[in-house]
Amino acid sequence: MASPDEAPVKDTHVGKEKKPPARYWDEAEEGETHGNKGGEEGEQKEQNTQKTKKRKEENDPEDGKKFISGKSDPFPGPARIPRDRMEKFKRKNKTKKPSQQHPKLKDTIVRSEKASKMSQKQAARFDLLLPEDAGFLEGDEGEDTCTISQEDIADAVDITSGAKYFNLTLSQFGPYRADYSKTGRQLLLGGRRGHVACIDWQSKQLMCEINVMETINDVKWLHSEAMYAVAQKKWLYIYDSNGIELHCIRKFNDVLRMQFLPYHFLLATASATGFLQYLDVSVGKEVTATCTKSGRLDVMSQNPQNAVIHLGHANGTVTLWSPNQKEALVQMLCHQGGVRSVTVDKTGTYMVTSGMDKKLKVYDIRTFKPLKSYFLPAGASCLSLSQRGLLSAATGDVVQLYRDVWSAPVTKPYMAHRLPGTVWGTHFCPFEDVLGVGHGDGFTSMLVPGAGEPNFDGLDANPYRSAKQRQEWEVKALLEKIQPELITLDPAQLGQVDRATFQQRHQDRVQALGFDPLAKEKFVPRHKKKGRSSAGSIEKRKRQVAHEDQRDVIRKTAEDKTKIEMERKQREKKEAALSGKRSALDRFKK
Image 1 (cartoon, rainbow, N blue to C red):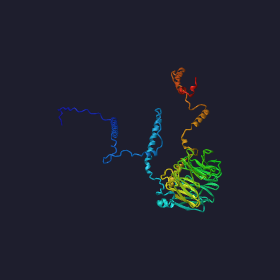
Image 2: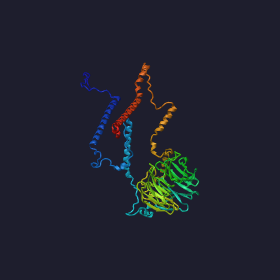
Image 3: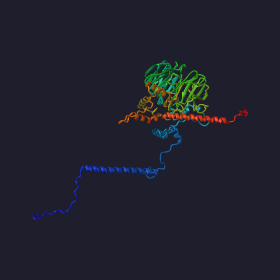
Image 4: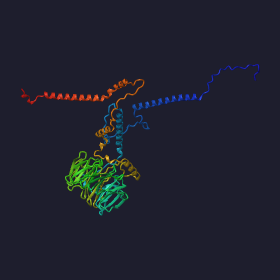
């Protein structure tokens, strides 16, 4: 304790100045500053990293393709595609790019070509995933393939394929017409004396079997295996796969032949009274009825490419029809006698006809000119083309098959088979090497190597689809249904502009409105304040843009003058050249 006499000692130590207490707003500002600096530094580092990577890729492109062991890929980049495979999937030629005046159009064309090239490459690569190839029957040296019987083929192939050759003896209600569903799984049989049967022919399961107690002229599957149409003696009937009658259409009477257009949901019928009628099966209404004025119609076929109906007549002509016109699109004189059968290939390029003159003719539908003509000793009553271009021609109780009838002259058949009864109808099964033949003694399923398309489109016709997939496909097909008005001889015309119709519509619109809505509006000066919209200033502004309105007229006049001048000069050159030549009559001149 210090004494009171002692004075207090002053602290001579000079301390550091104390900082004011920190405030929260000061900390936030410092944090933001540091954060901005850190963000800028991070962005700069990222840019430098990207530049370094890009530089490395340009200098050494193999650096990014090294294995774990450190070795480089000896085959860098995507695998090369053969040129012939690329040409197979080529879509279009390169479009000529416009000038710099249309940058948007140029950019659109570039993007379209890039997408087309990418899809072409993808399709060429995925072609390896279609391992199935179409095989044909090849005989030994000196052996003719048409002498090989169906029993020999069934013994030589595997058990599954051999089971596809079978005979159904149905002599009581024959002769029979046959039709396969779009997927090729179901078979529909219709006997002349009223017998109708639906069969899953691969598993040999009977779906339904009925007898309509009436004459049957033709049977046809509709859009799915759940419904089919039967052309009976009097009217047209619709049944389901259980044999239950769904509809009786009395407007369609005396129907002889039928064709179903799957993408239009149209059932085309040809009657004994000479009428061609179309039924929309999605709504159950008649689309159109056309009187062909050609008598009985018992020869009918369709073009799968454009959905045009081909009809054969007794006077030797074949006519092409569309539901949009009351007259025939094309009328061709094909035979000297009546036409017995007509068929068209799946590409819509070739048409094969047979007539009473015992000739088999092949026509190119693009030019409507005959390509080949063959003479058959007994003629051909039923013709059918497969997906791979094999032609079946039935003569009495014999079915003959031919290969490449339109590319090279055919001297002998590819295959032949004799049946127990007279052939009444032939039909190739889709996606199978099978030909179904309906005859007087029942039905025969023949093995025809190379007839069917080995690879199917699962989104269009899937033979292995389930019931749920079939329902979803049916809904999608109904949404994408093509209207009957779009059936034309040349489907490419749908993507073209009808300029004459556009001009006529424009004239009608001008007459209705009283003015041209597409005409360029006249320049109207904008109103300005402070006395700048006086009459003099408005006229001055109008004169400044007056030459723009006359620019097109002046350009057209200048082009016409240049054209006239060029024609005059050419005419003078020709006259000068003719006057300079010496004529043989010049020697008589004095």
